Length: 430
Image (cartoon, rainbow, N blue to C red; front, side):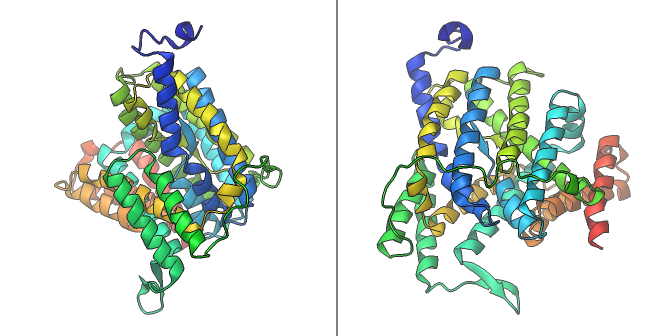
């Protein structure tokens, strides 16, 4: 039955290999449950409900992808957009988290629509590859900046806006220790580096009394009632919120496509233009984002950690199904996750930011128009605390540079459309 449905022989794999691959993917991305819950809880949403919701959407979206798309890709709440949701929209723009969930819902609906139409390709082809890479790098700089600020390494400074924090503070020192641990484990290419660093740093935090050790490891899952179906859609159906909604959709799209390109290359899938597996995986991604917003979560996306399972031989959706089953365990780990010190979590945010920022190495800086736009994207995202502002500034400057240089062949109707949309956040801010 499994052979016929997942076509294991055709993909040169077997049940044992797929199971090992699924467990490997689980170990490398298990960190997302406590990390996402701690990040989003800064909005005032209850952490216990977020833990349950994060675990559940990971299980459901990964399971759906395994069955529908038959690809070894796991999904969960995306790093970067969860930080933007929390620190950009709710804390930065003072938008209630219920309204922010409405933004996620509408971006998911848009993504779902474009997943079934040629509009996705039109949007994709309108933004040059170099700017897509700059967007990834900008988000990396943004979330690394957030991580360093939350750790206390970077602090407010009235004279210079930002400066070094109190490096004598025990909590800050624990964060620095955690950052060194996660960087060392990543450099050594140890599987599960993120969750291992969280565990090691948490133990140090417990020893130093920053947070109490958990009295138990397992409990029944917490209720999602405080956040489930609490999204507010009508209040974000405004022109001023359109760029934010588009920024969430575009970022999710490019994040997913970049992840799937990397995972697909290793697994030998997605190589054909218009690949059905790619299309179906993107459709699941969009459905999961809509579903996640209903549960009370920010954008769900494909996880690059799926590549670890592929490296172990995972080639089909059975790998994703095994990963989903492993995540059931996290539903019952509330006491353990709730006892993790914040500064055991934020170093992971910095590490993820570094990985994303590395995309900048592929940008062609010999093209001055690309250089200007990429610079704006990477600088504006962290300095304005907004992915939307960075994306908008980059697109506007790219359009402007091509226009004044007379490079009209590099311009398109899609780029003009995006440039006009990009004006909106600055007009409303003024």
